[in-house]
Length: 260
Image (cartoon, rainbow, N blue to C red; front, side, top):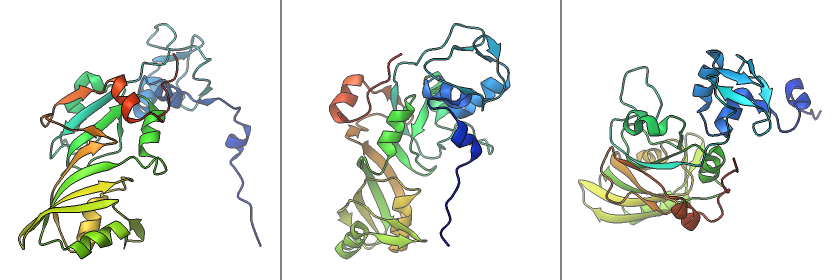
């Protein structure tokens, strides 16, 4: 018998345009969802002059008078995109229970209301983007958008052309189909090989998993390009603001910044 999955009662009754208060602050580019939840639960957010401590309280981001710490009604923040050269040994999270250094410790106040566009694991280095525009972040990471990411990769052992072609064709790894758009072998010996790998979908530890399945351990991995944005000469730990003109030139089909 064919069954129809019912939508939750909450979802059926939710009026169009309304979102939870925590998400509204995030959509306005004023705080991450976690930060927004903490602000709301601390009683620091008002809706139409009344303190609301429930992050699930429904509001319209553009039509509801929302204020933080008694200030004036908030409006959508201007779009910000930051490019960081993430060093090795730094985790892509706002805080770490193990006390490890985080990417937010590098960008300081600039990252207060920014979210990472994808992630790099602790052992990986290179280009990491942040933005306060959740629509742009979703567009950049959506597999259908097929934004290319380029990595310089060093692995143990000699990578033959057949292995590179197999990775381009795609491998089934733990039930997950993983695939690189392009693998170029720049240098190889019996000791190690240097590769340029291009992905169009950044699945979790995708390159490391592909190489391990192919019999090669990754010893160095650095992202040097994301959607045409280049890491360039930016030193590890340094960051810069991506200009609006760069975004327009490189990503003409990206969603336009929402109006304040």
